[in-house]
Length: 391
Image 1 (cartoon, rainbow, N blue to C red):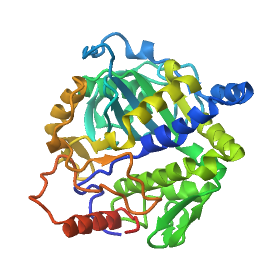
Image 2: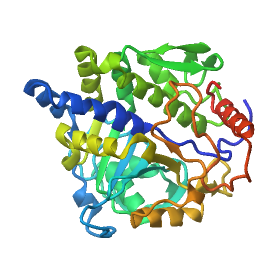
Image 3: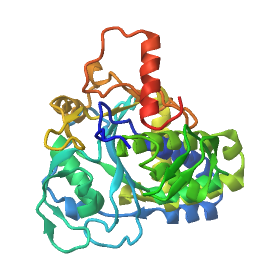
Image 4: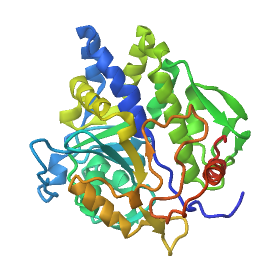
């Protein structure tokens, strides 16, 4: 295995929002018109955590932009939510593999999903421990330590402290729920460019394009070694491809017109979801889905917070100075400048588990002057290869 650091020039853009807002939420609109029993059962599956006390009163203020407020929703992909209880921060064990700040503009014409690399080094504020055993002092740590220490509450507090953006809602999706969700869909197609024999993770995957179910699906989204040299970066890219493929399958006619498959998928999806109390209902989620549908998939844009290398450790990142400009524009509900959208991808980009569209350089990188279409395509193929994806 190469000794090349896990981080190169780019952190992939996450597609968890696609799975949540497209696969689940769009289908919720369909089911919400069904029978009361089904509605009550699915509604009861959704867990909620009230983090108001843990967040306290020292929070960013919302900036008025008109009669309708923008929405800022923190989306988290978690290793597990088992062991949840009533502790102050929300007892959700594990680390947060995926974090996206979804900003929905006040006029509902545009939305941004800003990915935050889990191993970027940040100054984390003091947080109430999620086990209820006092306060953790915080300090310079990897970003995803916030979730490990204080669950969703500490992650929200960290994001608000760093960005000065007020978070209105949050949603945690348990990655272990993939197994049931994938099985409910009858499997999800993936493309593995080379056979995987990961002795460290005890994962074996054959090369080729095929459907994965159950444990094999979990293996695909968790594998870190033996398929790419860039560790978590490649794993996140493959998770994006998997979620995009799952989104395609979930909103296909074969799912939406099949009541048994649709119900089984929604049952698994809602069991994997934890939100704040105001979002913890089918009605609220369906309402959010309709707002996103009204925006249009091409106007839901995904980007990564600008970053640069962290000199003390080449396996870590830090936010670049341009990040302050990005957060300021989101805080004031202003369109993100073109210089920060040099590698944006939209929610309309879907590849059925193969190479991803929009896999360009980091938003903090300087775009080249007028690259040819062939150069762009070659760069995308090289990036897919680096991330263990088919080209």
